Amino acid sequence: MERFGKMDKILGKRQKAEKIMSVVYFSLGSNLGDRAQHLNDAKSVIRRNIGEIISESSIHETEAVGFEGNSFYNQVIKVETALLPESLLQEVQEVEKKMGRTQKTIIKNGAPVYLNRIIDIDILLYGDLHINTEHLTIPHPRMHERDFVIKPLNELFM
Image (cartoon, rainbow, N blue to C red):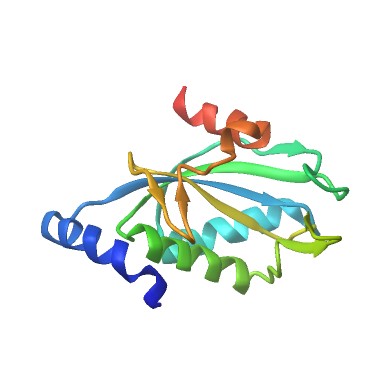
C-alpha cells in the first residue's frame, strides 16, 4: 500500500544491504471464545508470516480496560523479523483480519468505545526505532499505562 511506502523505502535500503533482522515485541490479547487457543493461533500465523518467536511471556488474565467486557488473556512475544515497520503493521492487521477480528472501537456519543475481540495484536517495540506516522507509532504510545502489557513485557527482559 502506498501509505506505508516512504518509511519502508528509507529503511529497506539499509536492511537489504545489511540483511538485518530486527527484534520486535508484540502484545497479544483475546477476550472472546477459547482465548488461549486464539493466542496460539496468532502465534502460529506470526511464525509463518512474520518471523521466529524467540521468547514469550506467560499468559496473564486481566480485566477489560476502557470498556465493560470479558476478561482478557494477554501475552507478550519477542520475534525476529525481516519485515520493515509498515510492512509489519500490514501483516499484523492481516493476521487479525484472518482470525476474524472486526473493528477495535466504535464511536458512541462522539467518543471511542472499545469492543470485545477474538484477537488484538499490538506492535510494542521494533528494535530501537522511534516511529510516529499517521498509521504507526513505535514504541506503542500507551504501553507504559497498561499493566497487561508491562508485566508480561518485563518477564522477557528479566
